[in-house]
Image (cartoon, rainbow, N blue to C red; front, side, top):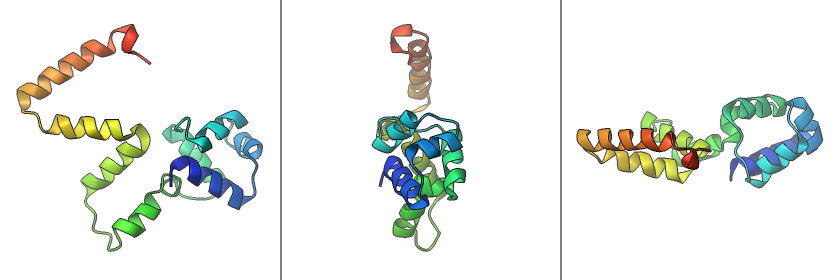
Length: 128
């Protein structure tokens, strides 16, 4: 399940409306609606506030607990895989793909990409 699905299900289990949850975490009901629909991904600080309000761990909202039970029942999963999962949860599949491709480059290729990336981030048409 997505983080939005988890927020919605846990909110309903806790008996809160979107408006009530929003008030508890100092956000708007519209923000909660967007998180639940998957239109927006909450930042880490918001995830922590939602988790506190719903009395769950942030990892539960992110779906890591379910994933952990399914794919790592013995608790021996590598730190690298957990890092990839957290990057994917926060930034999406493109970020994971970017990191995987970056890892395949030699030192010269990595330096070139970082230089080009720095240039792109300075151009307003590529900025968020």
